[in-house]
Length: 521
Figure 1 (cartoon, rainbow, N blue to C red):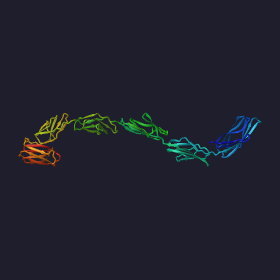
Figure 2 (cartoon, rainbow, N blue to C red; figure 1 turned 45 degrees about the horizontal axis):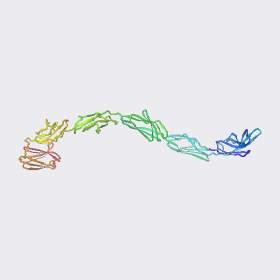
Figure 3 (cartoon, rainbow, N blue to C red; figure 1 turned 30 degrees about the vertical axis):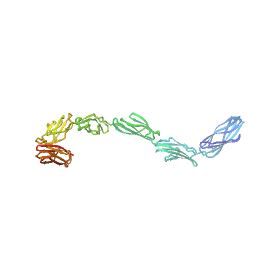
Figure 4 (cartoon, helix red, strand yellow; figure 1 turned 60 degrees about the horizontal axis):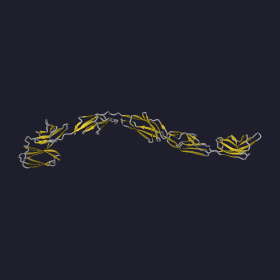
């Protein structure tokens, strides 16, 4: 606090008067001019009169400065006002005796008018800390000056105190204003600090990502942070450790090896560091199935139109065939190279099996049966087998077959790869007669294919009974009629009641059999 010192001096040999303003509990060092002299003095003596008890006086020095044949004398002294000094004015005297010798002396008196000032109150404080993590304990030191009688602290969180040097606990995060009021009965002063205390949460770090992986795969390990970004942190995996800085609250790595992943230190922008973490993410390797095998029920060479069944090793959750199949058992109808791999309950895949090569062989051409009276015939092929009504005809392995029974005939043919093809069935009606159609017997059957009718037109010279019938491929008769022969027969057969399909029209007489294949649309 600034001290105000003033003094008044009179001419030589007049009483000097000093006016001093001083505050209780403080000291002033005063330097005052006393008198001029043309002669130097050898010694001096000072005595006091009317010095009050609440003032302390100490003579520091009396000295002179010689200039222009004149000695200027000064006194420098210290004055101290006790703490209990009253706020009032007082006067005391300093008597001086200056000596050149025993007979040559000079006397002088200085009156000191002292005004004890009521000092202005100035509030102030300091703290041992003003930034820290929650909870934060702060020690406050009062620096207020002046003659105050009371203190009022406001910590900004709803709490107050009147202690001289309080200690306060902040148990919530945020920034807090601080205010101290120092006061007495007549005056007060306020010291206010905006956002002076800042309390934040300690940074936290968490590691997640426990997972089993398959060899060659990876998984995410996530480090999650709280606090004030950016964060400096150290993470480890096994014996290795890595330093990183990030402003994002999450940091992700991809783990490919079996290990434990953890944090060893974390510091946020509040310069707060933690070293103890309870989280560890563990990554382990799941087992891998052995390479599967492919089993099949016959040769890997199949004929066109056939199917080969492939069986992979059983007991797995997932099957992945190179042709897109996804089951343990698949069927193949095309030429290809194929392999399979399997996965267990951990979704770990095995290596692919050995590759299997499937070959699809061509079929022989479909045989076409031609009829020459009582003989059925196809072109020559590698191997032949004839059938009657679905049964093999013993020994019927040539390209020609003489028939002696009515029924449905067809033929199977085989090539050198033993792949077969089958002809259409032909229904044949056998007659013991010569079965030769005479040249003068002329039949015309129209239309073919037919829809709702068939027209039979005959021109010839026959006197025997002629009959006709329409039969299915299985030999079942669907229409039948007898008619007496006469010249130039024209007959219409209604067929709207016959389902669509393939039929045979058989016309017979005593020595005549005509078979015509029909198609109902």
